Image (cartoon, rainbow, N blue to C red; front, side):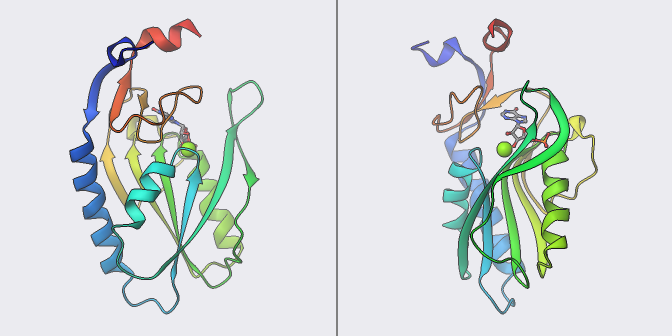
Amino acid sequence: MKNTEDYIERVLFTEEEISARVAELGKQISEDYKDIDSPLLTVGVLNGAIVFFADLVRKITIPVQFDNLIASSYDMNSHSSGKVNILKNLENNVKGRHILLIEDIIDSGTTMNYLLGYFKDKKAASVKICALLNKPSRRKVDVKIDYCGFDIPDEFIVGYGLDFAQHYRNLPYLGVLRHSIYEKK
Ligand code: IMP
Ligand code: MG
């Protein structure tokens, strides 16, 4: 597995394409939130959003604070259970705060739908979603994505934070994983 071609079928978005889109998202977010009276609480959904989070927050020009969480929508057998667990929660009290959830990819929508309800119940002033990627064809739960990097077809994507079995997160671009990689497992 030394050569990229062994596991990447094709590049979906290059570093340059991602960077340009992230800059646009940062600009739009800065504009939309310019009148809020407390710093925007940017919440990275770990681990997948780490790279996107780090790039996006540096394109936001209004005051922000950082927090993060880990959520799992899968049971022990890795079958999607539709049930979401928060494995690591925020350090900030969200009451009265404007929250921007930053996620790598929205697939079934289960995770984000749960988190939206969770933060609304905790009396956040507002909760919005910023997702780098969106797979609309896979949606099971209707969820509004306020800021979306790219709509993509139903293929398995790795790189720029996204993994397969914890691999490939450090690729600087977004690529389609070869079928032979997940058929082997
Ligand atoms: P869902 O929207 O609740 O189904 O969950 C989305 C999560 O599934 C994402 O945060 C990823 O961790 C994972 N996921 C879905 N599709 C992909 C993919 O193509 N590559 C890598 N991870 C994915
Ligand atoms: Mg994720």
